[in-house]
Image (tube, rainbow over all chains, first blue to last red; front, side):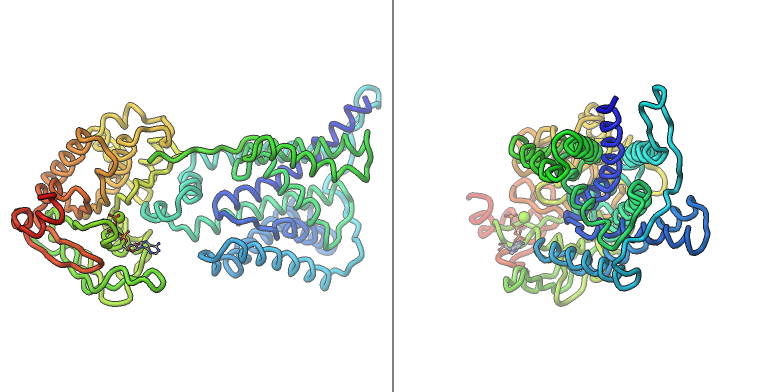
Length: 292
Length: 235
Ligand SMILES: Nc1ncnc2c1ncn2[C@@H]1O[C@H](COP(=O)(O)OP(=O)(O)OP(=O)(O)O)[C@@H](O)[C@H]1O
Ligand SMILES: [Mg+2]
């Protein structure tokens, strides 16, 4: 029963990683860049929803919506101002810029909200008790897992069925050819950032709800882990991000419980290294050779 | 027969490399015009400049009476310009059908009819509708690249070495398709290594040499020219 409870908390944690990882992987797949500021957008989503609930007294659902809107705009703004001018630049320059944007967001939050952690009231409270109370699962955990599944299914349908989703895949494969088809590459990339950032907002609210605290660096560790999850699952792959996130969350939770909570992070990253050694493209990453 | 494309004194650079040096040419409505030249002469660069993927520092490109020199590539499809790029550049991880859908990305209606026409032209693509494009054979991939470009009903179809890397029988087939498109009224700008076949289907031709047009005339004239025979027709 104890194991089951750790497993469930791992799945819930993993679902948050998966939601973040989906944002990483979509942006990477289409813009071919690692948006290291993605984790900090999570933190912004946390603060926006906190202010909306605490200071403006809005309902949690309206708060989530508001956080999504603000983060979407922020994501599109970051892309347009910081990354778009570097479209033809070497990828190292883009990476350094992304790290810069990450620090900019963290320090802006530090300036506005201060360094002290703020307490965050979960958007839903309560627990279900199963097996005569031996196993308890919080509603936040259930909501997180449900949200993750819904998002994953929606994204899969979007990229495989919708016209814009197909255009995204075309852009991810070959930007010049996509332009020749009449696809506006810049607006497709903006759309990707918009979707990724809206997901980051949802992840922010769920993460803060399960940790009950929020500070300017809140997004950075989950951001890095979600990035790991995305690479683990095969960067660029939507099911890969989902799977990678879940596995990472479970590994982390079980390591904390049965090995050592200090070592948990090291174990998570060691797992990544092992997977990449065995399968360099990640679990579900694919490599299609080009015909000549 | 009106002028559909007019390229006027373009100069294109790759950094310090001056790849196209004052090239001018025209394509009239209903014509097949071919651009021939050795490797590195600047044929692909010229096509990419017309489609806006590369920009000229001088001159102008007029398509259907409109100056398109500064119009972004993705807005040209709707004006009636389509390109079969060098090396096919199909979307390898998407299905055949999805590739064709991308070709019709800007079309508001009539997609089913276009699809039907393309499938009629290339029955093999219909058989392989659901196959991932990366697993098609080279010839099938070339057909897909052509079919994809035709999905937008272009006024001008630009093709960059459609016969590259294909077996002789497939090369013949590609040229038959070019001829049937020509008969159906499509204007074609064809870049080819296979000068002999290209000159045979072409109404007019230009010879490009290290970024300059050194000769022009009807397909027949150029086929008969001793210089062209020596340099490009192996005789
Ligand atoms: N991306 C690039 N960077 C630098 N130089 C380039 C680039 N692309 C082409 N060039 C140069 O520009 C010149 C023209 O190239 P282009 O590709 O237009 O030739 P081409 O006539 O299409 O040749 P081929 O028949 O081999 O396809 C060549 O000298 C080539 O080396
Ligand atoms: Mg070429």
